Image 1 (cartoon, rainbow, N blue to C red):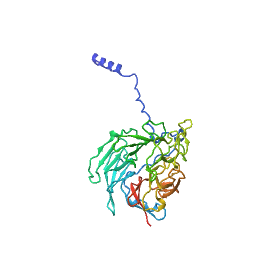
Image 2 (cartoon, rainbow, N blue to C red):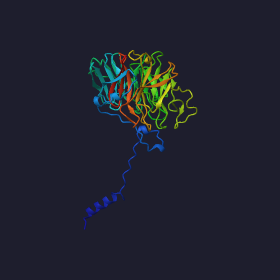
Image 3 (cartoon, rainbow, N blue to C red):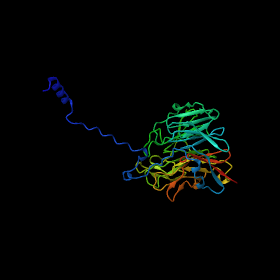
Image 4 (tube, rainbow, N blue to C red):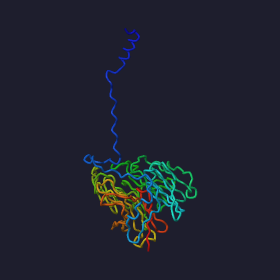
Length: 405
């Protein structure tokens, strides 16, 4: 027989136990990735997805430079390599080139030694530090959540950065919030803030282009309705801002097309989220007369082509017909059954944006016979001698384009 104390303890334990085992609560389903937002139910089985970047070094010998095609008289060479994720470029006063990245979180510095170029990592482990600019001896780096200024960095490589983040009041969302930054003819720093979505009604802080004084003061919103601009330049004659903009995803293979826009007055609305490309209403967000009051593009730039850097050529190395001509890098599509873009084109247009015409310039990155690609051109930078650098984000390389007379 049990002792009374043992029996009492057993009865107490039994009364405290649940009548049956409770199942563990089901884990909440994982949220879909941001790039799937706006995808209709009937496209749920689509295999389309963003093209992953190569985050490892591509040896120079593996870069297919001879497959790239240019107009007669032009030549491409591998100017620098070994910089995974290389995107936007800025040139220092003494000739060093600074390169931002997105996924890998680095900023590189390239020194030209004449016969060869060497590179180093200036800063690492930032959140998408795609934006780099140079002014008065200082390198400006803008990530999603941080703005750093490296004073005198060309002469003092180990200089500690000045943290300017608080002055710029950066909005927090990451999606489409990576930057391309540049100082304009007015000395102001121009900064886009993309929409935090594929398609949505964005908050007041997003889908716009701003400009600031160099210290972060005097913020002014100069353009609205801009979904995702990551490249711009100023017309050499009119000094007006021309900028690229990515069209939304999941509205089909053929649209809405990416855009090339011209800002003729501060405060213009370029349509997002209700109106896209050449007055195409959005299929999900409805609005009466969605394109009324919208500034339409100078030129549409192809479906899902991922237009990136834009540069008006002002040098003397290229033939005269290239003077003041706009170059645009198209990194290439992912939200399309058959790939599109993966090239550099020129856009010839009147100063007021009329009569625009696109012409291929640097091709051979995309093999249309099997829908494969070897690289993704992203940004352009003109050197003092009139040659032009082209960054390849996929291969982590910089190409130099020259013309022989």
